Length: 360
Ligand SMILES: NC(=O)c1ccc[n+]([C@@H]2O[C@H](COP(=O)([O-])OP(=O)(O)OC[C@H]3O[C@@H](n4cnc5c(N)ncnc54)[C@H](O)[C@@H]3O)[C@@H](O)[C@H]2O)c1
Image 1 (cartoon, rainbow, N blue to C red):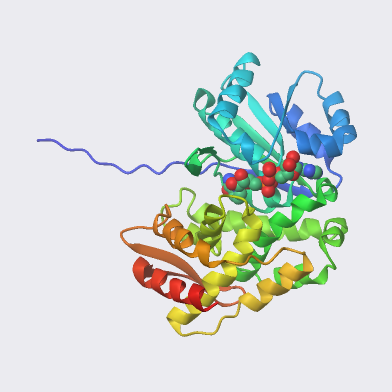
Image 2: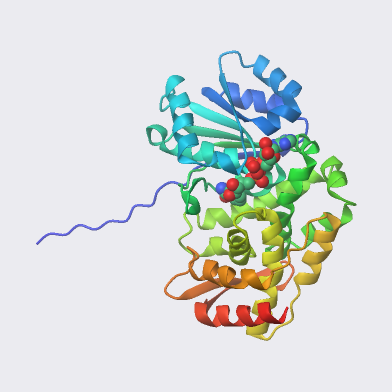
């Protein structure tokens, strides 16, 4: 018998990330230098930034533009096949790139199309919401929903370029507060000065108007990429730090039938996870008060978890795709900026959560 074994480590992909304001020249040159054959633009962004986008389009006469109606309803198999058909009609080949201007929903769809079309064409990301800038455009996750599961189909595939022009945040202000939860998360798991900056703004409007916002987003992007680069495919466990607030947050979203938006649910999720874990570990909860302060500042509504939601919340956590061999990994924030991953028996965690829900 003969048996050969060898280990091959795949080269990491390279991603250029630019954060700034008033950087449409950088956007245009990155598109013209990258053989971009198609730009997909979200309707919400286009409605607010038509004049700016028309100028960008005017400087790129050879590139096809497709406008799509964005929002969660976009992440379907039908939209996936529609966009693939458009890519085909543009005759994109393996040397081509596609680009998108939009929030997390368009980014997730475009990333999934880019990664599967001809087994992968380059992707340029121009995120236009706060959530997309600090989170969804970074780290390579993409995907679409199935009728019985959010993000049930997807791949890991990094864009070659991500360019964030924070000026794009100045309109559609009602959508932007959904990105605050992720910024709070970075402050709690890695860099507490982020929380000071967040609390130094009067409200959402003054945040998006501030010259400091590009630096804040840049810091968040560096934290996310630092974690992701140690665990690009969610294997070693390093990436679990990014789940802080998300296990309970996702369960709240699911238990509400997805009526509650992601950022609002994660704000509540961070508070509940912190309270439950402090009970289990017998430690002080150093998180909830801070999260509540930020929620008030950015007018993020506090979610009441009514009795009727308890069972569906518990069930959603029990069947969470991150549960492994009956254990749940939760993030313990000892003090803002210092976080550990803790593995616990799932049933023990659910028991304490259930008791906490009943008492509160
Ligand atoms: N891939 C990941 O790692 C990851 C991480 C977090 C969230 N997500 C996904 O992100 C999605 C949510 O993203 P989102 O919050 O950006 O929502 P979204 O993409 O639905 O955008 C929110 C709304 O803002 C509008 N909009 C976008 N840019 C605008 C602008 N500059 N000015 C005015 N309006 C604008 C859009 O038209 C839309 O109506 C969810 O589907 C979630 O699953 C993905």
